[in-house]
Image 1 (cartoon, rainbow, N blue to C red):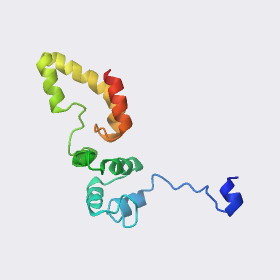
Image 2: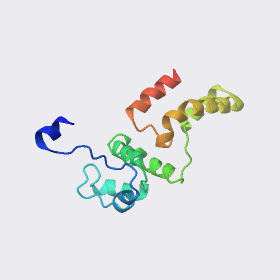
Image 3: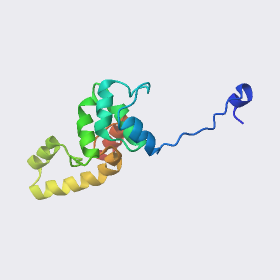
Image 4: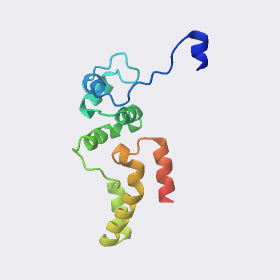
Length: 143
């Protein structure tokens, strides 16, 4: 029995479901997030409506992206999640660099290797490095 229950008779065993479709549809997809910390600003609401979050991972990612640095990637994240933009692990700059140093065939082969290495790290966030931990794993994979 948890100490808090013994002392204050508060049951802390409740675990809210993390896949409650009703909550995703009626609260987050509609932008009705007044009073929900980190999700109640007008900008965040607009992004949530466009995002159409249907899992807790989407909300966690949106919370991480809604910061001054990574905020520019929110439209890409939304478009990739909704299937409006192709998921890619190679930026135009990296592709250009490969093309300068490899033949087109070798560059394509390097791209395949890159996807094999990066997909497990970045699939959950649609090919966008959202979390610091992802960046650490990316550096490890490229070393």
